[in-house]
Length: 375
Image (tube, rainbow, N blue to C red; front, top):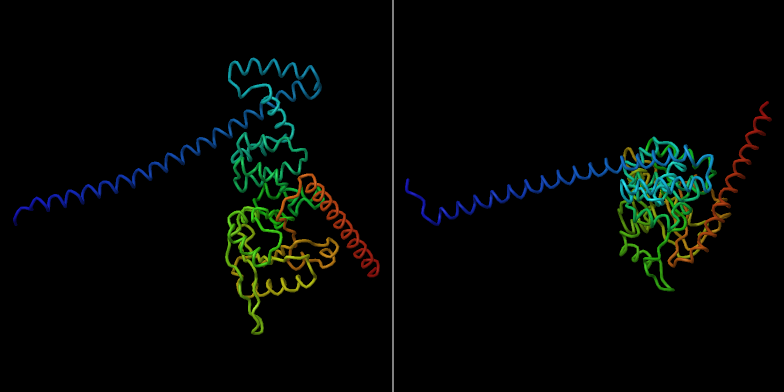
C-alpha cells in the first residue's frame, strides 16, 4: 500500500483537529454547566445560612431587649450594637439592617417557615415582604415567590400591581385564606383561587379608545408573553379561535390555555362590553365540549375565564358561576391612579366577603330547617 500524499495527510489532520475541537467544545459546555450549577447551589446555601443568621440575630435582640422596652432604651442598644458589629463585620450589620432583622423575626416568628422560604427567597426578597402591613398578604407573596421563583424585580412589580388584592383568595374570610396558604406551604398544591385575578391589567396592549374584540385578541397575541405574565405562572398557550362544532354549527373560543399546576384546560372568552347572562351559557357550552373532546386522562375539568369590560357583582353572584367552573373578571386597558384602584379593590373584597357570609348563613338556615322537618 502506498504512502498517503501530502493533501491526504492535510485532510486527515484537519478532520482530527475538527474532532478534537468538537470534543473540547462539548466538554467545555458540560464543565461550564457543572460550575454554574455548583455556584448556584453554593449561592442558595450561602443565602439560606445568611437569612437564618439574620433571623437568629433579630429574634435574639427582640427577645432580650425590645419585647419589654421598645422605646429609646431599645434604640440606644441597637445603635450601640450596630456601631460595633458594623466595625467588625461590615455594612450588613448597620443600624437599619439590624432593625430589618428584628422585623423579620417579628413577622415570621417560626424559624422553620423562614428556613423553608430561604431556599428560594434571598434577603432582598424578604426586605420587600416584611414591611407589608397585612400578615396574610405577606404570607401570600412569600409562598408564591417561593413556588414560582420570582426575581426581586418581579416580586416588587407584583406587590406594586396589588396582585394579592386582585387575586380571588383575598375575597375569602381570613381564616379560609390562612388555611389555603398553609396548605400551599405544606403541599405546594395551588388552587384556582390563587390563580385567577380580577381585574387583569392589560395596559401594555396599547389599545386606542375604540377597538373591537378582534383588535383585543390580536393585541393579546402580539404581546402574548406579557399577557401570560399578567395571567400568572404555568399558563401555556394552546390555540386562538379554537373551533368547537356542535350540531354542525361552528363556534369559536377566543383563547385556549393549559395550566400545568392546576392540570386544567383554561378557556378564555373576550367581551368588549359588560358581562351578560348569555355569556355564561356560551362558556358552559365551550367547557362541556372541551371536557368531552379535549380533556385527557389525569386532567381536572376545564375552567372558563370570561374577560369583560365591566360586570355587576350581584349579577355574577345570582348566576352561581363557580358551580359551573366559570370565572368572570374585568380587564383594564388603562391603569387608573393607584389610590382609585386600591379603593375599588378594597370595596370589591368587602362586597365579596359579605356575600360569602350571607350565602353561608342562608345555607345554614336551609340545613337547619331541613333537619327540623325530618325530626
